[in-house]
Image 1 (cartoon, rainbow, N blue to C red):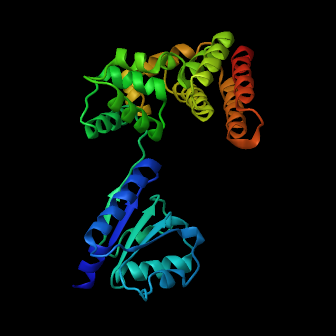
Image 2 (image 1 turned 90 degrees about the horizontal axis):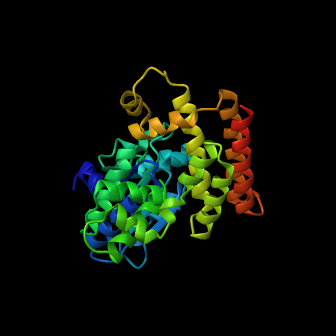
Image 3 (image 1 turned 45 degrees about the vertical axis):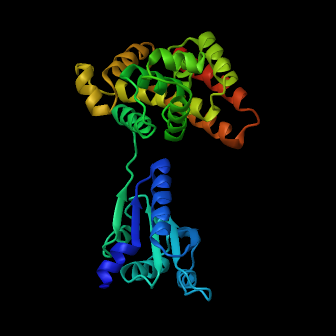
Length: 322
């Protein structure tokens, strides 16, 4: 087999920073390589940052017991210069019975590893826009041979938040535990109030200056199993939305601004209402409050619940001071 053809068959590069999609692509590539081999290959799963010059040669050296070898190199953009050069050489002419699966964020560093070998490329771009998340959920339900209408998708997004792993798990649970077309009412019944007490509801009440309601929604959300990390993420998105919409031209229509900012028009209208009482200085202080809360929730603080209560109180104070 010519070298170019061998590389194409033995190399898969997975590009993007959407962790769930990258992980799924890695699993698919590994499973495909295993199915194509007459023997179960030895799998080496390594991070590029942990490799030293010569490590790849050792990993891909022929085994005394025969059989193929599959090397998964994660975050190839983190490889040192010497390791990247060694990896590029092996990708261009893979050793016999060796298959490579690379992940790369798509950043500029070591981007040359994505080309020059003729391998297969799988793109896993970040899912950021509202419509893209709806499409992701539609695809998840389609995989389970189920359907959801737009109302059900929106309700599920409100109930769970924007993290793809959380959304994928929620879609899987709903598909397994319900029947018929998944709609807004079904989602609300399934979550038994969680849809009304998500991190986004907490964030909405906080940026609107409704301290009592925000704290009550926070306690309910935590009691029903909403992750503190999702709540800090929602607070961050709520404050960030204030800044993005607040700095945009006030004369622009909701549809035009929505297209520019990657928000649905109804979200732009809501944020414009929430901006009443805020100043740029207040929004900046709220950003700092959320950043501190995020660090405390992720391990720097003793109590995530206390950190969130304090953050909400301070965010409301930032608005009041404005």
